[in-house]
Image 1 (tube, rainbow, N blue to C red):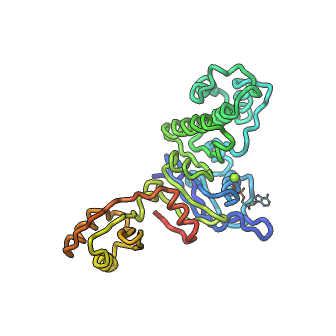
Image 2 (cartoon, rainbow, N blue to C red):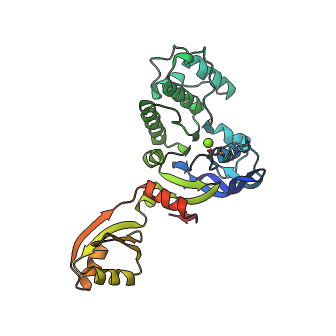
Image 3 (spheres, rainbow, N blue to C red):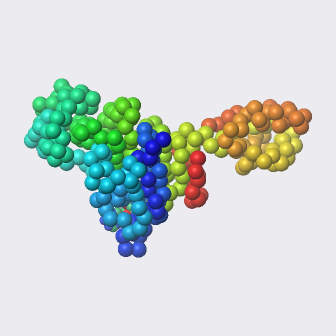
Length: 303
Ligand SMILES: Nc1ncnc2c1ncn2[C@@H]1O[C@H](COP(=O)(O)OP(=O)(O)O)[C@@H](O)[C@H]1O
Ligand SMILES: [Mg+2]
């Protein structure tokens, strides 16, 4: 694996507010990396720092193993704020302007417009575009010069459901080309659907990192019951792989298990103690449940 972006102890203060607090991150090639956190958690500030727009107060970052920032920026396409494109120009003209600014001499404008599904509307002025079309054109602009990495800050903000679906689909297709994508979002569902990896931040602090699948799979929850629920509870309490045990009403228990242990393990455990289970259901946690737990219990977790 090769590291696209490494962030160490990155910190930004605004007066007494610490917007980004000793952040450490590693983003590897080919990952679709979500930076997930509520509004005001420091996502945009982090992206601003790694793009050399905002000066950190402490810490460091390096791109592509430590090449000069000036060179790194040529390999990164960004969509940081609401796209700033010329309203009276059409899609082709706008992309030509971006190519000129980026000093890309032979941009594949037709190919990019096809990729973002705007080829048929390429001669209509930008001002006539829907928000979703504008966002897609901006993404085409970010792709000019064939960057290795893309940074998208809240790419679906303000879009209607159809626009959101189109932008998500587009990001998925860009990821399929092998590009590394770093995406800030406050929308859990979006990160769960698009990203392979996630860093969860709150108040500028890293709360958890890992693959989206691992975060979803970790600490599996099982609902369980037996005729003698007290006997069952007793043996579960003695087991090292079983974490939280809580009652659901009078008849059922909810237990959490270490990653890699599942219903078969619990079943065998009960069997060994001659306890017949009357109920055994695996409840897979969504990233949302994890997110809520993590943000309530601020303690960095690595999955
Ligand atoms: N230029 C600034 N001056 C003062 N405070 C700022 C500035 N930019 C951001 N902040 C504050 O820093 C915190 C993080 O902001 P931001 O990075 O924009 O969060 P996010 O992108 O996660 O919504 C917020 O509390 C915000 O109000
Ligand atoms: Mg932001």
